[in-house]
Amino acid sequence: MASLDTARPVSARPALPRVFLVWLIGTRASLFGDAVLYFALGWAASAHGGGTAALVLTAVTLPRTLLLLLGGAVGDRFGARRVMITGDIVMLTVTLVLALVGTHFGASPWLLVMVAVVIGTVDAFYLPATGSMPRRLVGKEQLPRALAMHQAGSQIVSLLGAPAGAVLVAAAGLTGAAAADAVTFAIVLMVLVRVRPAFDVERSPREEGSWRRWSTGCGSPWGPGPAARAAAHGRCRGLPPAGGVPAEPAPGAGTGGVGDRSVQDHGGGRGVLLPLRRVEVAA
Image 1 (tube, rainbow, N blue to C red):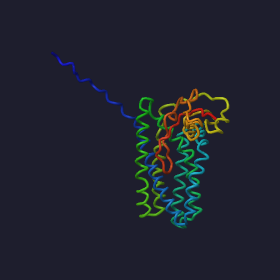
Image 2 (cartoon, rainbow, N blue to C red):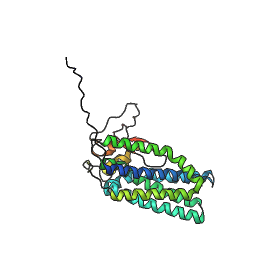
Image 3 (cartoon, helix red, strand yellow):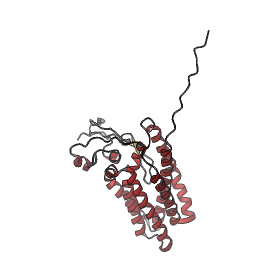
Image 4 (spheres, rainbow, N blue to C red):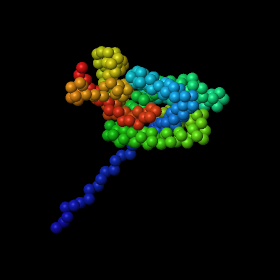
């Protein structure tokens, strides 16, 4: 009697697009340089006292928090790739200036604070843009794999960045860390200039009251695009209302764009996968 167990050919999963892999490597290299620079900034600020160190950390976090929603709206309005290229140019310039000024005049507290403010401001526009890029580079079928690689790469960089920063700061100081970060920004800038999004991201139709929704953190003034939804996770991520019952998704929530699934935070101390499903929260 013939055996019924027959070997069935298993279709191999298609490889992720090369353009996505190139973009992923470039942005992870930049993230690694960021982690090194953040450690170096904290180390240099601590030499001026605990108050200065706290001020530098606040100067990074405060503008990033205040401008994040606006950054998502700008990314949807002018294009994520264009926003990322602009941010990389600004950060390349800032890190080179920090390396040169630090070499000749030292790392004064005000220099560290100004650099921290620029970093936080650029992050506010850069994070939503980079969070929406995987959806623009891969198809819907491959998007979960792309997001998984995006997350895994960020976690690895977050774990290795601080120790590498300590070694580099011990060997070359703040200026060496700034120069290394400038190299990574140059790499990702060259990558972004060559990369072209292969997929258009669906955008939901504009809704009435856009400015009201944006002011409450649940939308953007130019329509609920993917970058704006990515930026709005903090206030619209489904926190339970006072009664303790999880809120239900709002009608039409989660349409179009990578922001509906997740976004990988690209800032200092990053590596947290943030849920982005928009909900209505009971008062």
